[in-house]
Each structure stands twice: as structure tokens, then as C-alpha cells.
Image (cartoon, rainbow, N blue to C red; front, side, top):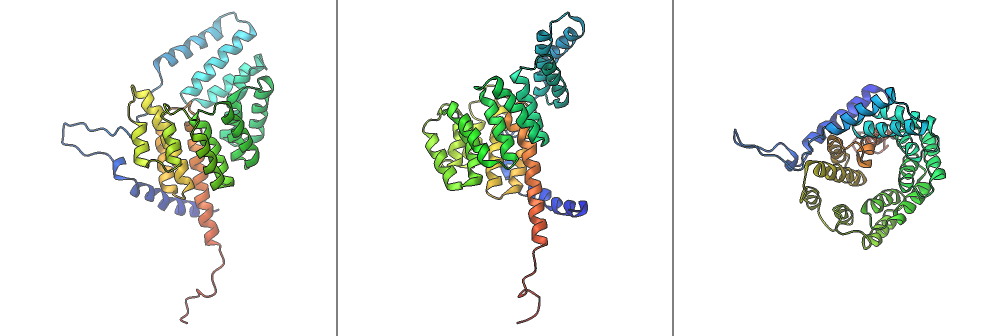
Length: 317
């Protein structure tokens, strides 16, 4: 599609996103000198001071210390995890690759490499990485989640559902596992996906706040109730940021399924705004937003090229 047409189509979409935001998400008004904050407005997490110090110490050890290859591999992996946790994905990948060159049987490093290939759309390389994880450690649970996500994005839905089913069966009380399975199954059959999610709800850990996301997907609570649950009884800022990262991502996915891309994109942006880089929801929010925008543009492009109805020629009848 020509770039000019893409800009013309996206501009009203982005403008509509601003106009359509609920009033509760706008900046609250208050008298001068009075601070009123919206608990549902994400405040980006700063890079922890301890992480910065740890990166510096590991870098010094790698440069100066006499280390065995396994020790050096572990330090590269540890530094890679720290880089990843603050959004420095290129530096993280460099360290993971160095770790694997020194220790080719490090399953954890393959898992991170697979995630990065998925985000980049390099699905074949992602499969190779996740397959390596499972060859080394067949019970490595998150390899099934991450490979399932790659398969779903690559359009291999049946294989994706199989991986999500295995992941869910390993810990049936985890609400997130049931949600990822639902989000794959709904593309195949919405009634079947809803039936499966309803069945899995009875086994969920009701103390986990994320069980409220499942309740929302099943129509048992409202969107306002879910947002309230995400911001209630939090004990410190990181917990709030993490729960907002999650709730906005799953609300965005839900609105995308309901053909409401304006609100979906707004929620993806809020999920990204938390800076909780290590969460799976944050990892894929930008990719989901990009895919959603592309779908809207392609739909508009297809509509533009539809043949005109001969009865709608503009002549009087």
C-alpha cells in the first residue's frame, strides 16, 4: 500500500483513539496546589539502582577476573537477563549469544533468544531456539508458552493450541495459562474457547488477582470492576505497575476481539507505559499493536478495492 494512503488511514484512527478515551482516563482536574492522581494511569518504572550496580560489577568481572568457561557463560547470561529487564534487548541478545557459545547446553539462554526472534518475526529461528530448550529440558514449562505464541503469530494455530494446552495442564490453577489458551482457541472457535475457559475457571487460584481477568472474559464482571481489581490492595509501586501492565494488555486483546481497535491500541500503549519489560504482556504489546494497526489498514484497503454495487451508481430509480 502506498505510504501516503497508509498515513491517511492511520491519522483518523489515531485521532479517534484520543477522542474515544473514557473520561476516567483523562487527566483529572483539581484546584491549584492540590494533587489528584489517577491510580489507573501507569507510571513508568525506573531501572533499579541495584540492577545498574550489578551490571557494572559483572562487566568488571568479565574483563578482569580469571574465569572458567562455565563461569563466564553464567555471567554473560546473568548480565543478559538484567539488560532484558530494563529493555536493552540488543545488549541482552549479545550476552545470551556469548553465553551459548561458551556453554551450548544453557536452556535458559535459548528461551530468551527464542523470545527475541518471535518479537522480530523470525519464526523459524524462534522454533529452533525453543526446540533446543525442550531437547535440553523437556519439562521447561515456559518454552511451551513462548513457542505457542510464536506459532500463533505465524498462523500455525493448531500447533499453537497444542503447546498452550500442555502449558495450561502443567499448572491448571494459573489464570494466565487459561487466558493464553483461550486467546488461541477463540481464533478457531469462539464458543469452544468460551466453554473451555468456563471449565478451567473452577480450578483457578481464586486468591490470584488475575482470576478477575478470567471472570471479565467470561462476562461475570465489568471492565470497570476489572480495572478496580488491578489497582486495589497493592502494597508498593512495582506491584501496581505489574498489574496494570497485565490488565491493560488483556483488555486490549479483548477489545481487539470485539473489533474495537481504537480502545485496544490505547490499552496497549498503557501496558507499554509501565516499563515492566520482563513481563510477557509487555514483550508482545508492541507487536500486538503493530499487527492490529496493519489489520485495520488492510481492511480499509480491501474495502476501497471492493467492486461497486451496480445498483448504487448514483442514478435515480
